[in-house]
Each structure stands twice: as structure tokens, then as C-alpha cells.
Image 1 (cartoon, helix red, strand yellow):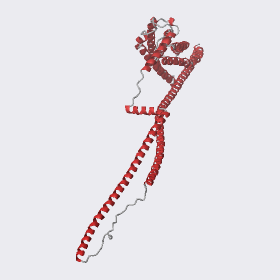
Image 2 (spheres, helix red, strand yellow):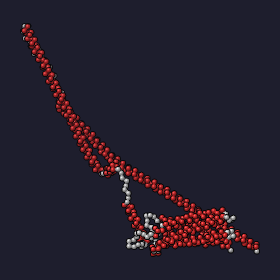
Image 3 (cartoon, one colour):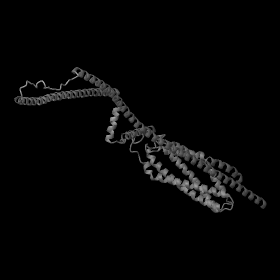
Image 4 (cartoon, helix red, strand yellow):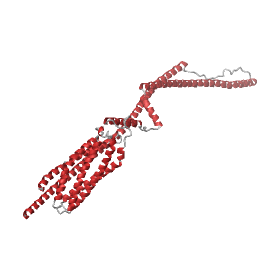
Length: 493
């Protein structure tokens, strides 16, 4: 009877539906790998698109799965139509879905056939001629449009079926929720298929356009290996052209560049050459300092001698002037005395007197206690002391200058190294920030992918469990109805 056929059918159908993810996930991964292999930096032709082979294999596996569950889908719709609760309108919708499911499987068979043909140039170039590329791409576009049309019909018919099932008195809330989930999934699949079909049709001319370059002496590739070699050479040529077109580095002002050049040259010069230059300069400075001090000391000695000579001249001139003045003052007195004596001698008796003895000439006499050899020895001692002091200070000055020059050179070199270290630190900090951002972005992407995967998995599991529960409940309902019908038949007899 029908009940004995339905009981083993539903568990097997539910088991097959639970295997859906085992076939869908590899197909999704194959599409992602194909998408990642097609970039703007590579030459994408059928000879180099090796990922099409894997996609074709995954699609063949999924097509086998569709063929395996097709009888169960059709049988389930047929048994639902045979139910006593199935109205004429619901039966018509089920038959429409019956035809749509057959068409859907046929469309997948066509897509698999044409995608398998497209995968041949990357594995066996002789399997598909280049003259047939246009035909294959055109049929793929037509198959995608047919896929989109069938999905629209399925969405339309199933929505009508769900609306009719809600009117059935025995419809449960679980059935309504299951129908809503199926309708949302079919609507999303319909939108995706429409986008794929429109994109493929709008770019059909680009797909069928022949290459404007290829191996020398032929219009097509000899083998996938030659196509891969051509692709590698193109990458090398592109990298070489890119290296030639490197942007110029940021320039700096001319004054800053000169200063940096001086610092660089001073830091790269040999230490021995700098030490020799410093030593020569210090020797010249020491000689000039000694000559300067020598002539300054000679000038001081000459000045001292000049002062002494001036003092001698002044003292001698003052002594002569004093003698002259005293002589002039003594002679008039003698003359007056003579005149007086003459007058007295005329008036008085003659006396023999003489005032010559009373005349006293007092002339200052200048005495010099220091002799010339003592002065010269003292000057030699002073000169020797100052020369020794000058030599000592000059040596200290040379040592301090050499240390200052050495420290200055080291400071400039350290400043240059510090600036380079700061720049390197900044660049490494930027690279660290970029790396941290990339790691964060990858972690976020990983979490998002995991969440999306878990959500998809949970959704599939929920849908499958709901569908299996729905089938079980329908099976139980049909069994009860069959039993009631059998009971009524037995009672009527």
C-alpha cells in the first residue's frame, strides 16, 4: 500500500537532505578559489584557468546529489497530491513544482556540461577548439538565464503552495515556519542567479574576444605549460616596468642637503687625517702664539728702556738748569759787593778784604746706585719666566683644542646616528602599526567568517531538521488518514 511505501521513503529522504552540506561546501570553495585566481595582474584565459577543473569536479558531485534526491522529491510531491486533504489548487501547484524540479536538474546538467568543456583547455587543449569558445560561452549565458527563470517559477509556485497550505485546517505553525524559511532561501537564490546571468550576458563579448597577443608564429597557445610560461614572463616584465617607474624620493631644501652632506663627509673622513690636520693647525697656532708673546715682551722691554732713557734725559736737563740758575744768581751779588766795597773804600779807610771765600756754589749731584749688568740680568729672568709660562699655557691650549675638536666630531657623528635611528624607529613604528592593523583585520575577518559559517550551518541544520520533522508529521498524518480510510472501508463492508 501507499503507507508501506511512504514509511521507508521519508527517513531516507531526510538522510539525503542532511548530506547537502557535504556537496555544497566544496562547490562554494571551488568558486572562491576560481575567483581568487582571477586578478588584474594576471593573464586570465582558459589555458591558464586551472581552477575550472576543480570547479567542474565539484559541480559534477553536486549534480550527482541532485540526481539522487530527485526521485524522492518527485515521489514526495506525488504522494502529497494523493492525500485526501490536498485540494485541486494545491494539487496543481504541486504538479507545477514537480515540473520545475525536473527542469532545475536539467539546467544543472547543462551547466555542468559546458563548464566541463571550458575546463578542457587547461588540461587537454585538443579537447576544445578555440573556434568553439564563443558557442560554449553563449550556451552558458543561456543556461544561466534558464536557471534564473526556473528559480523564479519555483519561488512563485512555492509561495502559492505555502499560501494554500496555510488555509488547510491541519496546518501547524511548524509547517508555516518551514515554508517561510524555504521561501526566503529560494528568493535569495533567485536574486543571486539573476545577478550572475545579467553579469555573464553583459560581459559575453569580453569573454569571447580572442587574445591580442600570444606565442610568436601562431594565433593560439601550444599547451597550458606555454601559457603558464607566458604568464610568468608577463609578471616579470610588469615587475621590471614597475621598478623603472619608481617615484622620486622626497627632496629636502638645498641648505639642509648641504648641511647633511657636510655632516656625512665629516663623519666618514678618516680619523688619522683629521688628527694630522688638527696637529698641524695646533703647531702653527703655537708658533704664532710664541712669536706674539715674544714681540709683546720685546715691546715691553723697549718701552721700559725708553722710560729709563727719558728719566735720565730729564734728570740731566734738570741738573744743568739748576747749575745755570745758581751761577746767574751768584754773579750779581759779587758785583754788588764789589761796588759797595768800592764805595766804602772811597768813604772809609782802605781795608784788604775779600768776599771770594764766602762764595759757595752748591750744585746737586745725581748718583745712580744700579748698574747696567744688574738690569740686564733682571730683564733676562723676567723674559725667561714669561717664555716658560707662555709655553706651558700654549701646551694646555693645544690639548684643550684637540679635545674640543675630537669631542665636536664625535658629537656630530652621534647626532647623525641619532637622527638615523629616530627615522628608523619611526619607519619601524609605522610598519608595526600596519602589521597590527592587518592582524586585527584578519582576526576580525576570521571571526566574521566563523560566525557566518556557524550561522549558515545552523540555518541549514534547522531547515533540514524542520523539513525532516515536517515530513515525519506529514507521514504520520497520511498514515492516520490511511488507517481511517481503511477503517471506514472495513466498517462499510
